[in-house]
Image (cartoon, rainbow, N blue to C red):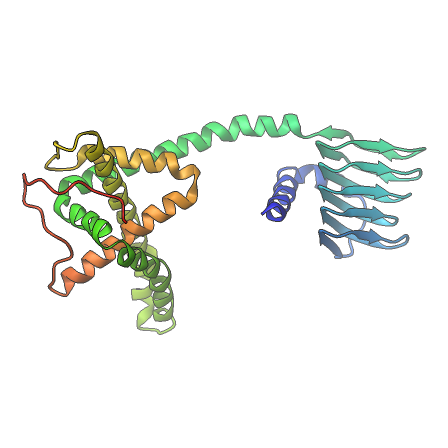
Length: 311
């Protein structure tokens, strides 16, 4: 996990500040790219590399490199030439005779220049820049999240109003048959797209597979998410007031979507809940299509049993 995080950080930062990298591009290109994770990279004197990327290791440059990216490691230039250096939690040493034509971008890193080592651009700390980007992206991400939550609430209210009996029947499947429901959810998430792609390999099956993959499957997954949200909302409300069960679960719809939206910061929680809901929709639809009963039906005004977590 730490390795993936370090790699992601390196490339995200490189993408964010790619204009600075391109602006200082004065060295020729050879097409050579050197990457090491938990290892070292050395560019000998007289040799050139377009890019050197080192994660938790040492980048030793004796020759030339257009771009040098080091994360959780060390960068050492020995009389070398480079266009740009990006260092994240990595000390940079520019020995005598070294020359960086562009900027040295740092994040929690130090830069040491020895002798006549020179930096044509600036030694810039990225902390302030990243904070500024956060101030811009933070509100935008929050607005997007609120927008998705609002859409979820509206859709859940519509589902609760138009298909309360079916929603509660699906919730009863989650309560009574948790294992079968979860397996159906996994099968629907994995097997269904594979079958759709297989259909698309034939000329006749292309439109069917495409419509299923682009429209039907995502719609069913979204309905499954809403079913799980309403079930969670009813479970919470049943614990708060077991004696009161609404004819249509409007309050549960709002509460459940809000709860899942809050827990979206922990993706596995939302994913598991969605799989249960998706599986319940698939099982209920399958059994209804076969002419059986997916789960006990509820007459309007009746009192269903209090939802419960699967045993």
